[in-house]
Image 1 (tube, rainbow, N blue to C red):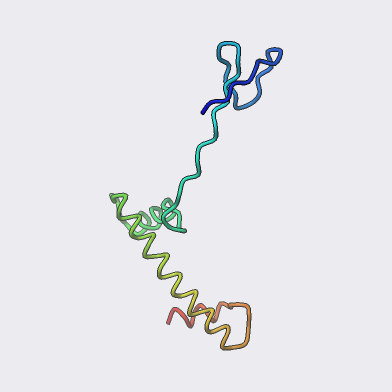
Image 2: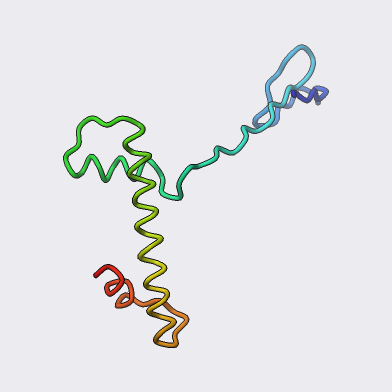
Length: 100
Protein backbone atom coordinates (compact mmCIF):
# COMPACT_ATOMS: atom_id res chain seq x y z
CA UNK A 1 0.00 0.00 0.00
CA UNK A 2 1.53 3.31 -1.06
CA UNK A 3 0.31 6.56 0.52
CA UNK A 4 0.10 9.56 -1.75
CA UNK A 5 0.96 12.95 -0.29
CA UNK A 6 0.55 16.27 -2.09
CA UNK A 7 3.77 18.03 -3.07
CA UNK A 8 4.60 20.81 -0.64
CA UNK A 9 6.29 23.70 -2.48
CA UNK A 10 8.92 21.47 -4.05
CA UNK A 11 10.46 20.41 -0.74
CA UNK A 12 11.14 16.69 -0.51
CA UNK A 13 11.24 14.94 2.83
CA UNK A 14 13.83 12.27 3.48
CA UNK A 15 12.58 8.82 2.50
CA UNK A 16 9.96 10.11 0.04
CA UNK A 17 10.10 9.84 -3.74
CA UNK A 18 8.72 12.35 -6.23
CA UNK A 19 6.09 11.05 -8.62
CA UNK A 20 3.49 12.78 -10.88
CA UNK A 21 2.70 15.71 -8.64
CA UNK A 22 2.69 13.64 -5.47
CA UNK A 23 5.22 12.37 -3.03
CA UNK A 24 4.97 8.62 -2.64
CA UNK A 25 5.89 7.09 0.69
CA UNK A 26 6.73 3.41 0.74
CA UNK A 27 5.76 1.58 3.95
CA UNK A 28 8.65 0.25 6.03
CA UNK A 29 9.79 -3.31 5.49
CA UNK A 30 8.25 -5.79 7.93
CA UNK A 31 10.64 -7.05 10.62
CA UNK A 32 12.45 -10.26 9.74
CA UNK A 33 11.69 -13.15 12.05
CA UNK A 34 14.79 -14.80 13.41
CA UNK A 35 14.84 -18.54 13.98
CA UNK A 36 17.46 -18.27 16.73
CA UNK A 37 18.67 -15.67 19.19
CA UNK A 38 22.24 -16.05 17.95
CA UNK A 39 22.89 -14.01 14.77
CA UNK A 40 23.86 -16.18 11.80
CA UNK A 41 26.64 -13.77 10.82
CA UNK A 42 28.33 -14.31 14.20
CA UNK A 43 28.01 -18.09 13.85
CA UNK A 44 29.50 -17.94 10.36
CA UNK A 45 32.45 -15.91 11.69
CA UNK A 46 33.03 -18.51 14.43
CA UNK A 47 32.90 -21.34 11.89
CA UNK A 48 35.26 -19.55 9.49
CA UNK A 49 37.73 -18.78 12.28
CA UNK A 50 37.88 -22.52 13.05
CA UNK A 51 39.02 -23.25 9.49
CA UNK A 52 35.79 -23.89 7.56
CA UNK A 53 36.08 -22.36 4.10
CA UNK A 54 32.72 -23.26 2.54
CA UNK A 55 29.45 -23.90 4.35
CA UNK A 56 25.81 -24.17 3.42
CA UNK A 57 23.24 -21.83 5.01
CA UNK A 58 21.71 -24.85 6.72
CA UNK A 59 25.00 -25.59 8.47
CA UNK A 60 25.13 -22.13 10.02
CA UNK A 61 21.48 -22.36 11.08
CA UNK A 62 22.03 -25.76 12.70
CA UNK A 63 25.13 -24.51 14.50
CA UNK A 64 23.22 -21.45 15.77
CA UNK A 65 20.42 -23.71 17.03
CA UNK A 66 22.93 -25.98 18.77
CA UNK A 67 24.76 -23.05 20.37
CA UNK A 68 21.46 -21.67 21.62
CA UNK A 69 20.39 -24.95 23.21
CA UNK A 70 23.81 -25.44 24.85
CA UNK A 71 23.77 -21.85 26.14
CA UNK A 72 20.26 -22.31 27.49
CA UNK A 73 21.29 -25.47 29.33
CA UNK A 74 24.37 -23.83 30.85
CA UNK A 75 22.35 -20.76 31.89
CA UNK A 76 19.72 -22.92 33.62
CA UNK A 77 22.39 -24.88 35.52
CA UNK A 78 24.21 -21.67 36.52
CA UNK A 79 20.95 -20.15 37.71
CA UNK A 80 20.26 -23.26 39.79
CA UNK A 81 23.70 -22.98 41.39
CA UNK A 82 23.11 -19.32 42.23
CA UNK A 83 19.71 -20.11 43.76
CA UNK A 84 21.28 -22.94 45.79
CA UNK A 85 23.75 -20.39 47.18
CA UNK A 86 20.80 -18.07 48.04
CA UNK A 87 21.88 -15.47 45.48
CA UNK A 88 19.94 -13.71 42.74
CA UNK A 89 23.10 -12.88 40.78
CA UNK A 90 24.73 -15.53 38.61
CA UNK A 91 28.50 -15.26 39.01
CA UNK A 92 31.38 -16.36 36.85
CA UNK A 93 31.99 -19.32 39.18
CA UNK A 94 28.40 -20.53 38.65
CA UNK A 95 28.90 -20.59 34.88
CA UNK A 96 32.27 -22.35 35.25
CA UNK A 97 30.69 -25.04 37.46
CA UNK A 98 27.76 -25.41 35.07
CA UNK A 99 30.17 -26.04 32.20
CA UNK A 100 31.92 -28.90 34.07
